[in-house]
Image (cartoon, rainbow, N blue to C red; front, side, top):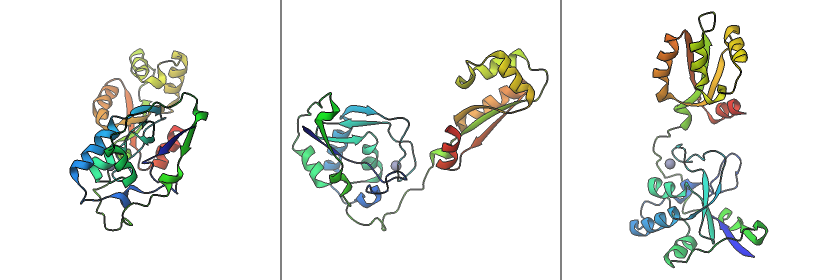
Length: 230
Ligand SMILES: [Zn+2]
């Protein structure tokens, strides 16, 4: 059996018992050592890709979508961000491991041969209770994305309108008949549930010229976003 230790998984709505990064913030740490740890984390082998992004618990930016490993530890790819941006200092056991300059080992292909340890990480409590840490203003990912929907304002539905709608992946495989019927009914078409606000003005203008109304509604919370994608 090869032991593999979980590292750097933070508390979330789904995992309330994991540690919170705010308790690991240490502004007085040695920057050279910290840089060494960051470099080590970044060069870890990509191990498992995850579905979707993880979000930084301290500033809200999308942060990483896969896991990395050196064969001893296994961590989310966004972990380096916490060190670089938020001055998180990882437990001494890991820092000492990095300083010993271990040679990465390969993990067995058969997952049954890996003894995965989460208890060590779960027992980490950081350096303080976090109450003294001043956070940067929280930038929510949901401030910039939202759902995009489209309604036809002119009748009958034109070929140019259908062509415009088809540009969106959600509708590229829809039959002309189905799209035409929906547009004709006056029901809004939900084009994309995750659309970046920066792209909206130009598309809105293009849609308007074709007799379509494009609506971009920003999400205000993770719950709202999840409701849409489910
Ligand atoms: Zn952050």
